[in-house]
Length: 177
Image (cartoon, rainbow, N blue to C red; front, side, top):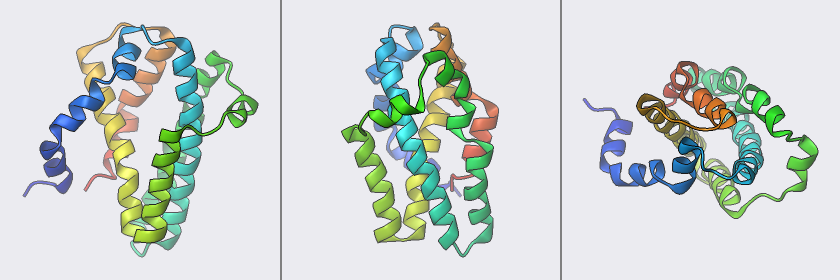
């Protein structure tokens, strides 16, 4: 029997290809992404990750399945992108004060708001499901990039290597059903 996520992935391949081929990703991998764009991405990603990790804790606290609750609370500890990426923050000379001074962008706001809505209005299962696309997309996209090779700036390579790593991917695959 096919996994539910495998079925979804197959049915939505055209959407996945659009994600993989968006200008941010293609420029990131070929090294032509403007440093300011990468820096802004990291600021917005930090804001997203703070909400993402908060939701892990809130969802886990309401779960009846203790194995899933344990997984959610420990994914943040095992694969905390903010702490794992600290060398990249250092290389970008990105401070918490600068991150705090930049407002949440509309797209990040919409994504964060949707995840909270799913949990708060639709329930624990919907909240848990709202976390999966981030893990899934990053894992699959950056593994594909690493498999085909890329030539880019060192700081971009560090980011791609982190997202394509076996550790990041194996932890994230635990969320797929």
